[in-house]
Image 1 (spheres, rainbow, N blue to C red):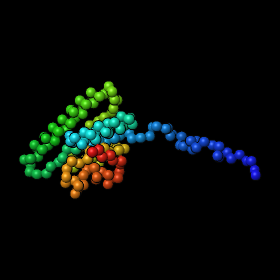
Image 2 (cartoon, rainbow, N blue to C red; image 1 turned 90 degrees about the vertical axis):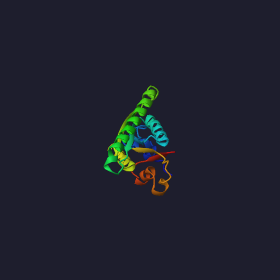
Image 3 (tube, rainbow, N blue to C red; image 1 turned 45 degrees about the vertical axis):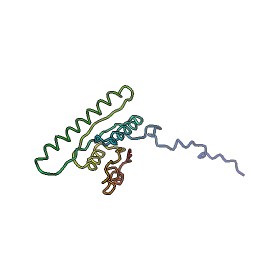
Image 4 (cartoon, helix red, strand yellow; image 1 turned 90 degrees about the horizontal axis):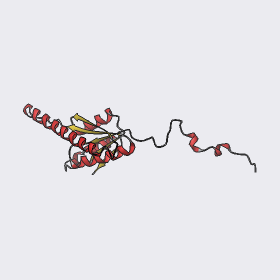
Length: 165
């Protein structure tokens, strides 16, 4: 039997990796979390914040202001109410972020969009080039029939979607 040296077998596998690869630097850069003030959305935001902190990613908290159709007389009060909800969410997020900033270095942004929650989250994820989307599980019974925002996001298949109960 011949005793030839097989140089290919002696070459370490890691040399075959692309030159730009660096272990530990892959991962999400932007994580979108949908918030609407519900308990489930706050849990989703907390979960997304933990992911973003550990991955050194930007946490984009998104509130979609619902556009309710109806008479013109209802338009102004509805718009004012959704603006107030957005302001209250932002105030609560800021207070929490300030309280935790010394312990956790977390980069975050708050965005509001108008329209259908599903369409608003899709637009936010697209505009912000999200790597992942985190939402709370729906607390409405009717969503079992027509599909929740979370189910629709999963079916879209454009980002990894985490649904937090």
